[in-house]
Image (tube, rainbow, N blue to C red; front, top):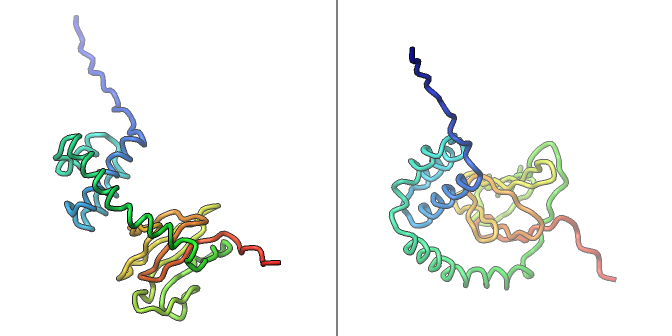
Amino acid sequence: MTSSFEHYTQPARLSDAERDRVLGVLRDGAAQGKLSHDTFLRRMELALAARHSDELKALTSDLESGGRWSRGLIRAVGEVSAFPARVRRAWQSERLPKLMLPLPGPRPLRIGRDPGNGLRLSHETVSRMHAELTAHGNRWVLRDLGSTNGTCVNGQRVVGAVVVSDGDQVSFGRVAFQLTASLPAPPP
C-alpha cells in the first residue's frame, strides 16, 4: 500500500536586502521617467507589503531591461551628474539658517504659509500646508503634505515621509534650512 504525501514548504521569508534591492530599482525607474509618481508610490506600497520574492519580481519585471553593464553605466552617469549639486550643497551648508528641531510634543510641527502653522514661512514657493515634522521616539520624521513645490532633504525630494536628523539640509519650496538639535553656545 502506497500513500502519497504532499509536502508543502513555506517559501523563505523575504530578506531586507531583497526588499531594498527592489525599492532601489523602483527609485531608479522613477528617476529615469519609466514610472509615473502614482505608479511609483503604489509599487513601493506593494513592495513593502510583499511576502514572497515572486511578488517582488512582478513589481520590477518591466524596469530591469538592461544588463549589468548598462545599469552600472546609468548609475555612474547619475553619480557624476549629481556631483555639482553635492558640491553646491556642501558649499551652502554652513551658510544656511539653522532650524532647531522642536521638543517632542503631542502634535506635529506644521510648516507652511498658513498663519496657524507652528512654523510660518512667507514665501511664494511654500504651500499653505507644506510639511510636518513629527517626533517618533528619538527620531524625527518629516512628511510632505502634498505641497506644490515639494520638500527636499539633502537635495532629494521627499516622497511620503523621511527620517531626518541633526545636520540635514531641508528645503520647503525654495526656502532652505539646516536642521540642528540644539542651540549653539553663545559667543564669549
